[in-house]
Length: 510
Ligand SMILES: *[C@@H]1O[C@H](CO)[C@@H](O)[C@H](O)[C@H]1NC(C)=O
Image 1 (cartoon, protein in one colour):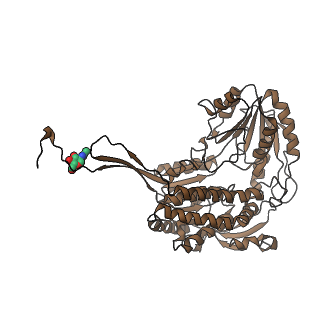
Image 2 (cartoon, protein in one colour; image 1 turned 135 degrees about the vertical axis):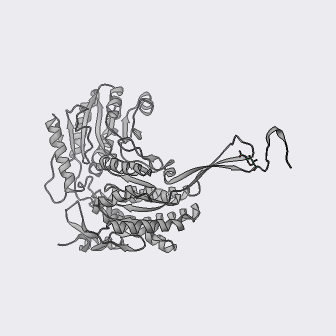
Image 3 (cartoon, rainbow, N blue to C red; image 1 turned 45 degrees about the horizontal axis):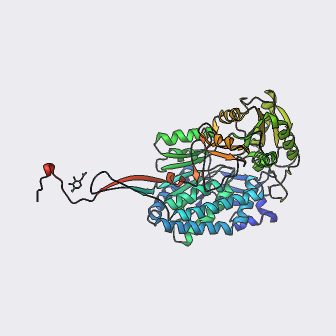
C-alpha cells in the first residue's frame, strides 16, 4: 500500500515532522504503545500516514508528566507565560501554509479554510498575550473596619482538552492559548481521524518549550480512542475538561465530570437557522446562506441547517439559492478553485444519505442535490430540501452534511418561535432591514442561542467574543470575552489588617 506522505506532492508534510509512521503520544518524549491507525485523506480515500496511538498506560504517564510540568509552569509570572504564547504564535506563523495544507489534506476542508484555522490560533495567541498582562482581580469595599476584601484568580492545574475532527487546529488553539496564560498545563486528546494535525501542532509547541528550557509536557498529546476520552472525563486530576463534539458523547462526558465535581466546557451540536424577513436584502441572504450551508461541506457546528423564510420572499429565495448551488465548484480541497470539498468519512456519507431518505419519507422535496458524487473520496451534492413541516423530526436533527431545510413562515414572531423550538442553541441569524426586528431578535423573547447575528451568516465567529451555545449545545463558552475565567479558580480573600483589639464596652486593655 502506498502512503500519500511518500508522494512528492505532499513533501510539505516533512516540514511539519510528519513521516510515514508517527508516534501519537507526547509528554516528555514522543511515544505510543497502542494500536497503529491510518489517517485517511477524505479527498481520495487513500492513507496519508500511520500513527501509533496511546494506551491507557500511555495516558497515565502523560497525565503524571503534565501534572509535574505544572509545578514549573505555575511559578512563571503570567506575563512570562504570555511571552511563551507570543513565541507559539510566531512559530504558527512560520508554519501557517504547511499546517493549513495538512488540515485540508486530513480533514477535507478547502485550503483557505485550513489556513484560516491556523490564523485563528495565531489570533487567539495574540489575544492571550495581551490578556496575560490584564487578568483582572477585584478589590471590593469591606463592611468591616481594618479589612480588605479581594478577588484572586489562580490556575486550575492540569486540565484536559478533547477536540473534534472539524476544527482540528482552531478549537485546540482557543483552549490552549488561554489555558497557557492562565497557568494551566494540559493533556490533549484529538479526534481519531485527524491525528496527524494534532501531532504537527504538538511538534510546533514542543520546540518552543524546549527552546525556553521548559518541559514540553506543559502541552501533552494522547492520540487514542474513546477509552482515553472516558478516562479523562473520570480523571480527578484534570480539574477541567473542555469537550467539543456531539451532544450524545457530550452528555456522557458531562455526567462523568459532574460525578467527580470537575468543571466542563461543552461545545456540542447545533441546529442553526437563518431567518429571512420580508424586507431583507435578498442578495445578501443568498451569498451568506451559500457560505454557511455549503462551506466546510456543512461540517461546522455553526453551519446553517434551516432557513426560515417569510412567505412573501420564499419563492425568490428558493430560486436564487438553487441557482447559486448549481454554480458551486465541488472538488479537491487543495485545488484553488474548489468551494466545497468532501465529507470527512465514509460514515458521514451514510448519515447524509439516510437523512435524505428520511426527509423524503416524511414528504420532503429534494430541490437540488441529494446524491453521492461518483468519484474517489467522500463527496456529496449540497442539498436543499423543502416541503417539510418546521417540527419534522429530521428538521430537528443535526446532520453533519451540506443539507439545508427551507421553511416558510408568516411573521417575525413565528420565525423566532421556530428558531427556538429545537433542542440545540448554538448559532442563529436574522436578515432584516428593520430596526424593530433587530432588537426583538436580540432581546429577551428573541433568539435563545449563544450566537445571535444580524445580516451575517450563522458561521464565521470572531475570536474576540465568547463562542458557545445554550441548551443541548452544552452552555460552554470559549475564546474571547471573559471565557478565560473558566481556566482559573476564583478565591474571595478577606484580610484583617487592623492592629486594634476592639473590646466590648469600649474598654481598652493595654
Ligand atoms: C481583626 O484583628 C483584630 C486584631 O487581632 C481583632 O481584634 C479583630 O477581632 C479581628 N476582626 C475580625 C472581624 O475578626
